[in-house]
Image 1 (cartoon, helix red, strand yellow):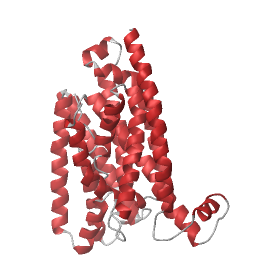
Image 2: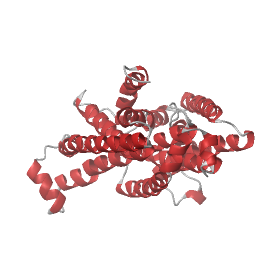
Image 3: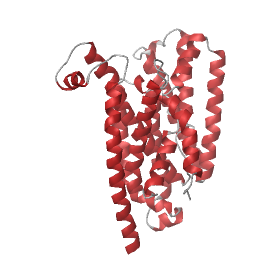
Image 4: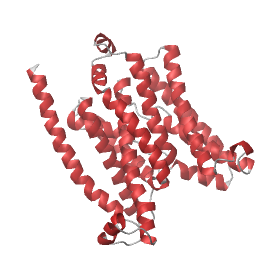
Length: 349
């Protein structure tokens, strides 16, 4: 027992040091996101805009473009990393993530269907006049991402499927939605095809302040649930039978956690598009640094997710300057080698 307590306190000290180091890395990254862009704005001017000025073109650039981008990276990185960490904990599978379960692909199909329907009917039906076209597309993406989750949960409940079967069902649904999206792209006209392809690129600059407020509310509530159940997730590490013997309602915890993780992913993907590998890689980075104790892993995974998205966004802006690549393209490009290194790199057991 003493060795466990010593190991916990040792990991906790390491977590504090890593979080402090992460904060040191995050602060200059925040500054670079605020300062980067086609409009040249000095540090003093940005300070005045943040706290004193309330008009002018520079004010609009900072408050309508750069700050939403920064806050979007904070929310998206935190939400996707926590969703991935929780899915990997409840399914006891290192490959569990929003993208491998088909949630992101379901959202992409929903958005593609919404874009196609708007072009087909030349405007929304009368009973949907209260929606603009962007809201309709986002709503369609959100509905299909949740439908994917409900389909996986329903299969798990009806067939009493194990974690491996749930992952495989997610992979199958992912392939189905990718095929349906390709089908829509094949018959779409040039404008619709361009919109569909652009939507699938995860872009942090896409969300508005109202979208970010909704996203923040959902991520805040689901994060509370995740942290409240961190001890139950740790019990699951020893297996379902051990967790049940400790009083954990494994089935209820697994289903509610999957729904919460999917809801978090759905709201992020709906407003930003697909940000691949963040939910898969960020928890593994945290696990390599601090171990599998979810009490410590969750905050570190969240920091890792934010760092990943900020780095991807900055790389996307600078690597092909003056052309800016969406963050989702960069995370997909670099996510594969990073994930393979984390899985098979030296020291991984």
